Image (tube, rainbow, N blue to C red; front, side):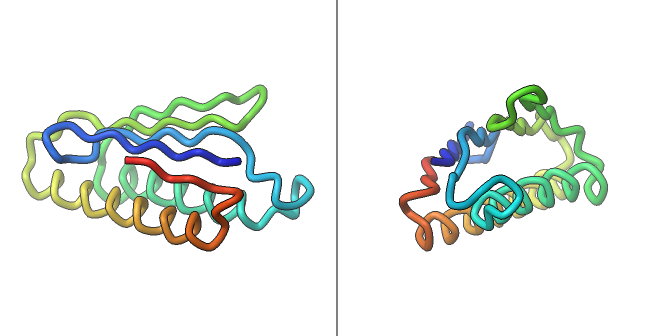
Length: 109
């Protein structure tokens, strides 16, 4: 199962940790894993490339199954608002996936 844990500080999204494997299908054919991965990587890329937010990204390169994105403290109000909107999008998208595949994905936070 993929477990997603969002953390907030002062009601603002601060980080997201994604762990585990969906095991919906064989490696390379797992649509649940692909959906989760696509959403997380897309938001990470948007934060960095579109908003110039230096996201701290930690992954388990050897085994996979672990990714953590942490937002830095943002002093620019517009940048903060846009970063939060992207994180809200990620939370919503992963929640919808979890609702469709509850035995393969769980979202907390």
